[in-house]
Each structure stands twice: as structure tokens, then as C-alpha cells.
Length: 379
Ligand SMILES: C[S@@+](CC[C@H](N)C(=O)[O-])C[C@H]1O[C@@H](n2cnc3c(N)ncnc32)[C@H](O)[C@@H]1O
Image 1 (cartoon, rainbow, N blue to C red):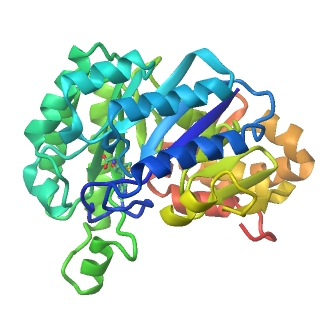
Image 2: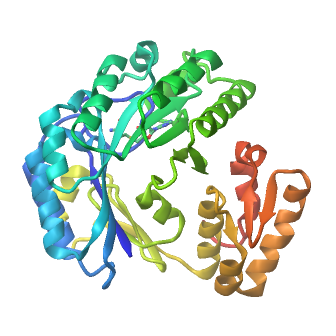
């Protein structure tokens, strides 16, 4: 079992919060698609004999590609990898790229999961974030996805946006759950250095929401999601039973994956590597011996720390049996000792053989996770 992630770096407009690798143009689209095919050919043995259970087209904005281009790309992937019959194939789509015909074409290519970047139902927030679409277009896009026959539809929302009150956020969630979506990713806005928001913050032109407001909005999120029948299975992810993202869940469960495209990450238990964030170099060098990526070999301590970081984000938590089997008694004892005070403070709980963050723990997950990091390596 393994996954394939494909990064499509093109965007039509710059979102003010975004730090993902992207270019605002459609320059070199065909050479880029050729380069992706070459990289796939060149790296086809990276996952050994594993079959492919998930494919994820992310970005950037994959819906900048024509449906026919997505079809050719997936056709090439199918011709070189062993794809499982019920493979989950997700594509991220911007609402204003949606037409009924486009979605039908995607469906006929075997794409079975649609991820729509709604972000907010308030046009005021969309303007502030420099999104291309209106709330009305997001509504139409969701309806079109259901009309085209997709049953696995997820949307992205952002909370903690400056100027958005708890009531606004509650209304955003109510509206989202009114559509019969099966999955929601809800991210607290992070203001990354170097982004437009980062620069605005530096100049004092953007004020981040305070901690109390963030906590209130997070609590509204967990309550409303639970009331709508969604399981909170990862810090930012909520799914109806049977609709958790298999691709992302596999990242958190140490399933190997191959990342294609500029900035894409790959992982195979023993090493992690990430492609250059440079479209021109990517096009020039993909499929050649020229080193396109940086690589980190994962020693046991790094693997331990990665396991802590990913497992604590999920509702499955740290599996103590797996910890002992993989990281020996030293790793097991370290986890048990570190967890004691968090359990005492109600930030963590032990369920059967797993250590899991409580809702209170999730609120300060970054601090807790950092205490589970074993010192002494570079991670
Ligand atoms: C790679 S992005 C973009 C996918 C798609 N092109 C779009 O814009 O809708 C995936 C998601 O991460 C979230 N995201 C990206 N940067 C963020 C930030 N700085 N703070 C909070 N959420 C962010 C957004 O919800 C976004 O939809």
C-alpha cells in the first residue's frame, strides 16, 4: 500500500496567506506536464512493489489544468504503477474553475474525491484573503459536484481570520454542513513570513486574532462538527464515518508515498526527500540524473520523533504496542514518562493501548508534541 502526491504549482491569483509553492501563470504548462511524466518514469521504483491505494492532485491549483490534461496525467500514472481497484483519487479544485462538464470529465477518469477550497462563506473574508471566487460560486460548485455524481466531497475552511467573529464562524459552519458534504478540513489561519499577510503583519496592518477568540472558534468547530455527525479524526480534519481522507490518514500512519512535481515530498520509511521549489529547474531536470531534491536519511530517533509528531495529531494517537516494537524499551519508556503530567492535567488520555490528546490537549498540541520530541538529532 502506498500513495502518490502530484503537485500542480499553477495559480491564477495569489492568496494572501499562502506559503505553498506556486506560480501565478500558466507558463510552460505542456513542458511541465511532460516533466511530470518523465519524473514518474524515472522514479517508478521508489515505492518498490507496493500497490497504489491513493493519488492526490494538490497545489497550487490543480483545477488550472484542463480535464483532458488531468486525464493524460492519470493515464500515464496508471500505465506505470499498479493502481488498486478502489484507489482514492482526490483533486483540489477552486470553486470558480467548476463547470458541470469539467466535473463529469474528471469523474470519467476515475477521480472519486473532490476537495473544494471554499475558505469562507463571507465575501468580505474572501476579498481580504484575495480569493478569486465569491461565496455564491462556492455554493454552485458544491451543488455541481453532487450533480456530477460525486459522493465524496470535502471543503476547506479557514477560521481565526482577522475581522471574523465567533458568530460569523458559527454561521460559516452551519452553512457548510447544510450541503451534505462528507468531509471538512478547517485550518486556523497561520500568518507565514514572506506571504502578503506576513508582510502586512510586519507593518502593523493586520492584527491576528487573540488566543481566547481562537479557542472559542476551535470549540465552536468541534461542537458543530460533532452535532453534524462528523468525527474529529485529525487536528484540522473532520469526516463522516467512512469518509476520512485515506491519503492524508496514510501520511499520519507512516505509509510510504511518492511526491511528483516541484516542492513535492516523498517518504519510504527510511528517508524523506523533497523536490526543489523551482518550476523552471524542475522542467529542465525532471527525469535526468541531475539532483532535483534534498534528502534526509531517517535514523531511529528521527523516525521516533516523526511518529510522535504525526500520531499525536490524530484520534488514534500513539500506539504503545507499535512504539515498543519499533523503538524498543527506550522509546516506550520515554513516551510513558513524558505522558504522565499531560494525563494528570487532562490534556491526554490513555485508551486501551493508545495515548490520545483530549480536546484541551489539541488546543496546545504544538507545545505538547514538542515535549515528546527526543532530543539529540537534527529534526
Ligand atoms: C494547498 S492549499 C490550496 C488548494 C486550492 N488551490 C485552494 O486554494 O483552494 C490547501 C489548503 O490549505 C489551507 N491553507 C493554506 N495556507 C494556509 C494558511 N496560511 N493558514 C490556514 N490555512 C491555510 C487552505 O484552506 C487551502 O485550501
